[in-house]
Image (cartoon, rainbow, N blue to C red):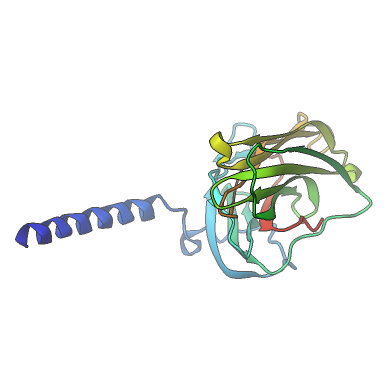
Length: 265
């Protein structure tokens, strides 16, 4: 009994140490953030139980701020999820993010927003499926006043029976603001099944450019290295993304939206 109690004490101390390390590595809280926020967004649909955090960039010799945006996969909650910037500290190279469950998604369909779509599908050899589901993720880059400059959306549709997936298809959408001279230079859409049909994954990529956005500075590029969605045998979906507008000459906002069902755009 004494040995068991000692082991529990050691385990408790180890867990406490892990929690302290995790807290130390967490993003800065808003309470410790700079107060010189500019380009504060207004009129956004509220989030349910929102939390906020600050991303700090590094000032480059040309005066631009370079950021290392968070990546990594996350399960999409049943309610959906939004991560977005709501203000930018230009002088301090900082972006204020908030995240939470959505009450509404942004609709950016206007005459100046061009839409390019694509799709791909492949049926797995696994049979005896029980249910079908869809899930999507859209990553959007916006100008200082919140107008879309470009975006990539990936939606997956898959069937599942608790142990395998099959019948997968992927839809992709690429949006760009033609009124401000953005161009779609390259795009990609791929799919795959995991080993033993253990998951279905759709992946979208893109490169956008604009020779006028920061004129007379060099051409601006926005890179979507990947926008990925996984469908799992239990009916849940996982998302991740990696995108960047390298060395921003002006402050840009970014939104990451994800949910189950059909993309409403």
